[in-house]
Amino acid sequence: MIRDSVLYDELKKEMIKERISSSVIYRNGEIEYQYFKNVKSESKLFKVNSVTKSVLSILIGIALDKGLIESIKSPISMYFPIIDPSKRDITIEHLLTMTPGYDWPEWGEWGGRPFPMINSNDWVNYVLEKNMITEPGIKMIYDSGSSHLLSAILQKVTNQKLSDFAEEVLFEPLGIQEYVWHEDSKGINIGGFGLSLKTKDMLKIGILMLQNGKWLNKQIVSSDWVDRSTSKKFHSYDQIGSYGYHWWILLDQNQKLYDPTIYFAMGYGGQSIIVSPLHNLVAVFTSAKYIETSSPLKLFKKYFLLEPNEEH
Figure 1 (cartoon, helix red, strand yellow):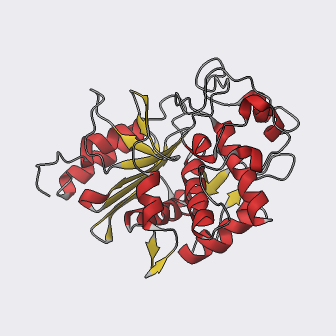
Figure 2 (spheres, rainbow, N blue to C red):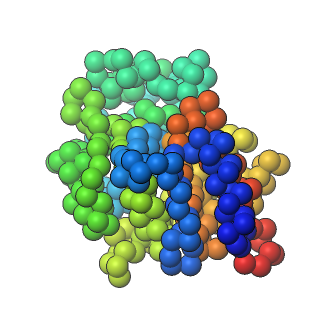
């Protein structure tokens, strides 16, 4: 763990080398260190890409808390009644764990971005029309289409845009005043990658999770949902980690858990919110590392990771 300014200086040198745009480190109730590439970076709205998915997960939890969604075991046919019979067993939980079972080569032949969905006229229908290749709940395959279906479900149950719901139940309570949340052509906020936030507002999301869903003594999302959504459900990609409900759980290079309490949101290009409850730590990074998205995660492992028996 970083203990002094000398090591922070080393971190800064690496962040400059790795073209990190900004970083804020929060530990034991205060901001311990912050780095901004330039003056504009401190106030810039960064396109956080798939960090959007983890924010979406919080909103699903809030909708459950409010009774707007009965259960994550609910089949998605409740919300999309005109659906092929082969997909009637897909549940909200399958979307959260990215295990719906349809063909979705986002991290394969699509090269990491779901351009076929993006270029379609109706994103929701595009996802719902994909061919099934396994039973739901068998294998986690990275899938921004699942996230977009979750966004559409939230808009149905709240009868408002997801961005409006988010502002009411999450952003306003956290004091997040500036953001952008892009929509598809049908007016559905993009669930998988549509959000832009400031670095310190990303930090607020991390602190909310670190505090078990509580902000200024108010429970924003239930602690039960924080625990459930950040617990390992499926092992996914060895080079990244395991998956919960739209949050990643950290693994080491031998696919072993460093610490099962460490979880993170990760977006294309090197956007990260990393939370370590055991060490009361949140680390946020933004960058434009489109070749090496995991660079911030590697920096976190190098400079901030404690072994379970290591002292602060």
